[in-house]
Length: 632
Figure: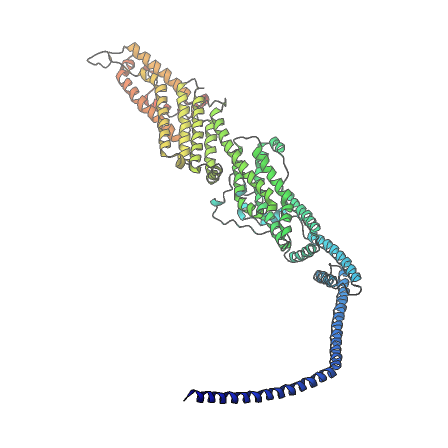
């Protein structure tokens, strides 16, 4: 196809499209004209209906406002009705129906909140004023009710009730004396196989506690915390102090303690240990329990109230302990100091729990300070005792050479210490010491101090034989006591063996000093090289030897039968040791030289003592016989 033909065809198509567009525009114009007519009609209709719509909307709004107003009036009337009902309950007071009274107070608070939020309500100011006055009166009556209820159910606890709550081992016996566990040297719960169970003490009946809690809660909500605090502190604090006074607790100063006779003071310390247990485990624990229940939800009051209630009572109890710890030290106080230290350690975890809050910090620190003070004083008393033993200058001489009172006192003291092993180890730990070695060192030093003192005392005797007998008796007593006690495990077998050898050394020294001279009478140095039975001594010399022996043995018998070896085994062994040396020598002398005397005049004048007689007389040695008791 040629170009002209193509142009022709294209022109035909363009003409066709123009015709179609012209028709479409005509249709569009017609539709716009129709729609415009509709819009004009709708606009006229809307204009005609607008007054009707406005009236309908106004009527609807009016109905809604009427409904809201009716509801608001109904609520306000309801609040007025609640006010009237609450007022009636408040005027009746809390005593008849406390629960209803507390509900009325809650209603008043709700009413006050309502009218405070609806100030536009007519007479709202008047209602608010009336409701606030009513609430103030209600809270005032509530305070009175709280005080009365708390006072009525807060009574001092009688001692018998407290004793009934103690474990059996800690209860006083029917004669009124405390059982073993509350006395001197006996506070060792680990030694008892029975479980130590305390019965919780009921200070206020459980049914009353919720009422007191509700009353306290209302007072806190009313902002009357201070009034509540004072009422609770004064009531419960006074009752707690009265309970302790009935028990026997008294405030004593350091001067009061210093003036007391030891027996009186010792009894008071035993009582104090008992009182501390009762106070912490029963009374303070009971106070903590009711305080937590009454002030549950009022955390700002709970701990300060408990602290204030117990403060005076804690101070009185601890002040006695401080007075003892700071009083003049003496050896007999060591064991009561250990008893006191022990009870403070026993109660430490409970004290930390009960007085763990910031409000109770001062009491907690005072208790801890007393524990450390008692430990320090006890340790210093150890040093004093060691020094006192070494420097003991008792002039009371033990005339018969028996065990010195100082020895038995010190040994009993040391044995008694071992009843406190666990306590002593705790005490040494207070000062960063190694407990086992510390206890060993203390015991060893005390034993050495005693031996040093005994050495000094032995020099008071003019008779060197009695000196040796005295040392033998006393060291033997020490060794025997150690072997029979727990001290043996601490001091060790080597210590025991060394001191047994010392006992034997003194026994040997006694034999040498006491019997060497008399044995010389029975000893003959032979002057004949060929040996001869009697050529070495003349008859006169033999007579003189027998006379000297008789006099010396009589003197020894007279003197040493007044001496004492209190241990029967040691006494028999010492007699036997003397007999084993003396009797063979005497028998030999009689056999050798007896015929020279027996063939002469008055042989009985010289051979007064037969070996059997000497053996019998030796059995009277060391029996502490007086002159009148002696047989010869």
